[in-house]
Structures are given as C-alpha cells and as structure tokens.
View 1 (cartoon, rainbow, N blue to C red):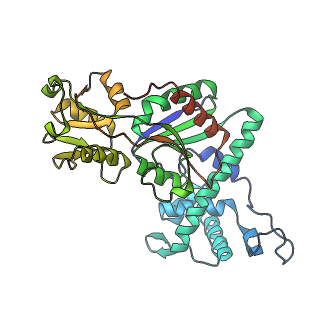
View 2: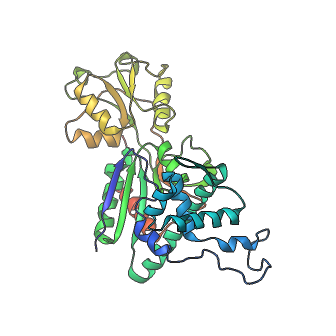
View 3: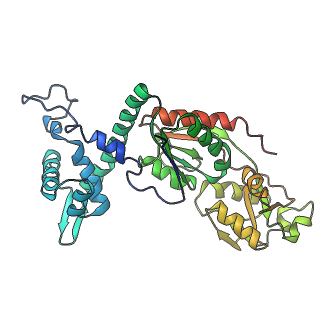
Length: 357
C-alpha cells in the first residue's frame, strides 16, 4: 500500500498529525511500565517510586487530547472510549502523579501547570514510542512509517523536493509530511516533538545546545524585481542608489533578515523603512511581479522563480551572505530509519547543487 506525502505552507502542524495508525498499535500495550508485585522500587531509577508502574499509554493520549480539545466527552469520543473510562484514566494518572492536571469548568477543562508539563512530556514520549514501532516494522518489512520534516523555502526546490521524489520512488510505504516556514517557527515545532528534523538555519536559535546541526549549503543573497520593472535595465548599481525604493523584507527576528541587515550595514545604510514584511517566498515573488517593489532573496529562489519569468536580477552587489542552512535534529530524540533515510537523500541531493556566485 502506497502512502501519501503531504505539504503545508507556514501553518503549525496539528498535534499528533499523521500518527493515528501508529498510535492505535501503541495503544494495544496497556501498561507503559510493568507493575511491581512488591512494595520496593527494584527496577526503577534511583529516586523513583513504584507509583510510576501505574502509568498507561492511553492516559497520556487522553491528557494530550484534553489539552487540545478542552472537553472530556469530546476527548473520550476522539479516542474511541466511553466518558466513564476517560474519567477513570484521568483520575488514575492524577493519583499516580500526585497532582491535579486540569481545572474543571462548566464549559470544559483547562490544564493546570502540572497538566501542561505532563502533556509536553507525553507528546515527546508517544512520539518516541511511534518511532520504536516504526523501527521494529522497518527491520521486519523494510522502511515504513511517517516522517515529519520542516524546511525553509530556500531549500524546497533543491535539495528537499529531489530527495522527496527519490524517497517516494524507493520507499513507497513511507508517508512524508512537509511543513514549510521560517527557521524560527520550524524550530519551535522541532522542540515540541512535532517534527523529526528541520532543514533550516540555527542562527539566533534559542537553546541551541539542545540541537544537532549538520551544515548543507550557504548561498549569496540577490536583489530581484518584477520583469516589467525598469530598474532591471540599469547596470552597475550601488545599494545606496536603490535604497529609497519600496522593499519586501522577511519578518523581524528571523535569521533571514539578519543577513539582509548585514548587507545594508556593510554599505553604510540602515534597513529600509519603506518596506512590507513577508515570510512566504511565493507571496514575495507574486508581489514583486505585480508591483515595482524590490526584494532580497536567496540566489536559489531567484533561479527557481526566474524559470517562470516571475522576477529578474537587479545589477547590484550585496556584501553579505545568507545564513547557511543544514539538517537540524533534537539531541534528546532518536531518528527513525525512515527519517534517517530521507536525511541522507537530502544530503546527496545537496551535493549536486552548483555553488553560489
């Protein structure tokens, strides 16, 4: 059975997206840790107590669904269980943890700080269990499972799309979900466990010590304009000559903007004030083509969109480089065989990309 690949552009992934089939198999394991028959803590980490033997996987699935929905009846229905069963599961995990996880209101349930903490760890734990199941399946059946990848737009035409094509051809039983966005947004999804890895930049990343980074490419930024813009007929321009034009720039606090700001500072100029900020490269190309605005984009994006006559190259040099991008994974999480295979295919595709000017 061939699985499909899905792509989202700049929208947060739904909690637990793509995991229904794997979650159902995991839920068949009723107890997460084998119960101890006596009162000692043999077999538990130092400082732990036997109460942890009472944890069940469906308890954690319920906590996640309650945080998402905020209603016990709807959460129980979504997990295909009765409301009394859900109530019992919630009581059991609250007793095991010794803390109230939700505040009951007439219109629903709101997580307490303990509930939010439990949900955060539950999401990571269930993701690891899904990877374990995928790994076992892969050993028995070849590579299968789900891969959730985040990628900045500059990496999508190459190397990500060629790698996805090879993945679908060579491993048709793997379902890939591609989420496109800026590096800062994608890294938040990675921290939360909703992405397996990111193709992006770690420049300015928070908690960079929690990440593992393997560089792929760096490239030069270029100034572009719509093909009907008369500025394309001018040659030998300096940045100061076009500073007063209207610009399209990335949003504030993004790694991409830092490189552009460095280019303007190198020319003795501040960032243009007369600008529109956009994270979407497709929207940037569309607006550039419909107006006389200018934009600074990675050279790979210019090469891609110029094939469709969406933009032309302005003859001006920028003395700065776009922040390099690479493969980013979380140090505290394992990589499934399917995700590891896709990472290698992306690395292979990157080797065939010509260097920037």
